[in-house]
Image 1 (cartoon, helix red, strand yellow):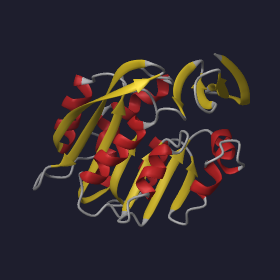
Image 2 (cartoon, rainbow, N blue to C red):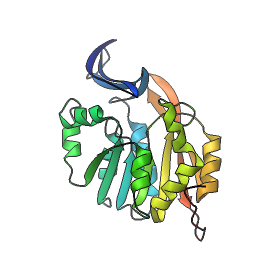
Image 3 (cartoon, rainbow, N blue to C red):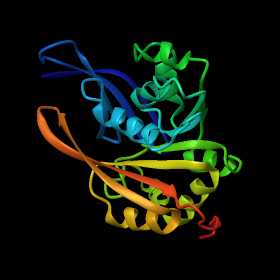
Length: 234
């Protein structure tokens, strides 16, 4: 198996590398790494699809969706595949990754981002959510890291803490839902979601990743009916 570097970006957050994996059966695979840590590739994206499916299934009318983390676009693609979705904001902190999608460095990116329902916001997802008005979204999906136990960027720890969860809850329309992806079990996150929203559940999924059987977890939270609104201060 060999690797060829396709693109690289270095910022204050570290190094982002897109590389091509060759020498396996089938077509070459694009792989994304952040600070040396595997993030995702184009060979196996069932986890991204499951994240979108779980979120879209949790509400009756997911008209307005926010996706935290563009990645290689598979979560966004799955969201836009649902005819009920009228608008999707996808928030990505790395400008280079957005450009790689837009300029065809990632081959499927150009067509995906051309969808009129999609809007890319280049920002930290915490800032984008905080600036959204109350009841702005029916669904919020967070896939910006490997979960609270396997952070790529230490600053992302705040995205799993109670104050930010309260901010997310404020942005949800009645009947809305938050779905968070994690590479490992996160019992504290589940407890915090339950405390912040009133209802939360853990879903376990199996995936085949680079010839290994792996598991990942989805955490789904919905505001309990009649529960008083939480403040952003917690």
